Image (cartoon, rainbow, N blue to C red):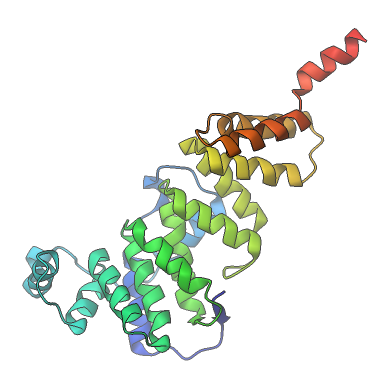
Length: 263
C-alpha cells in the first residue's frame, strides 16, 4: 500500500502539479449520484485557492500544437507531455504517467500516480486501475498533498457514477489505507453506487457489509433485502446463489410478524 508522508518540503513543481489537478475538478453538484457530505467537502476543498489554467487550446497555440501531435500519434517529448498535462489535459496526463511507468524508474512512480489522478479527474476512468496498482504496491511513497488530490480525483469520478471509482474507494476506506479508515464513507459510497447503477456485484457487497453489522431493526433488514434483490438479478450464478443464501437469513420482517401472529 502506498505510504503517507505528512512532513515534506514541496518544491515549486509539486505545488504547481497540485494546483493543476485541483483546477481539473468540477463541483459534485454536476454529478450522477449523490455522494456523502464529507466526500463533497473533499472534492470542493480542491476548488479553493487554485490557479485556473486555460485549457481552451485555440487561445494557447503552443498547447494546441502539442495536443494535435498527441492525438495524431506523432512523437511527443516528455517535456511537451508534462506541459500539456500540467494544463489539465487528461490524455496527456495519462500518456505521461504511462511513460514514467515504462521507464522502470521507481522514483517516478509517485509522479505517475499523480498524473494518473489528473487523467481520472478528467474523466478517463481507464487510468484508475494503473493508479490503484501504484497505491497498493507497498513501496511508493506519495506525499500527503498528492494523496489528497488522488482521493479527490477518485471521489469526483465516484460522484459521477463511475463503478470502478466507487469500488476502489469503498475498499480503500474499509482497509484504512491509503486514505484512512472511513467505514461510514465506504458504506455511503457503496449504497449510492449500487442504488444508482443496479450493479449486482456491488449490491451484494453492500448487503454483506450491512449484514456484518448484525442489524436487528426491521428498517435495516429491509435495506439489506433491497440490495439483495438487486444482486438476485445478476447474470452471474455465484452472485445470485450468494444473494439467495443471505436472503434466507433475513426474512421480510413484515412476513415474520404475520407468521408469529398466526401461531
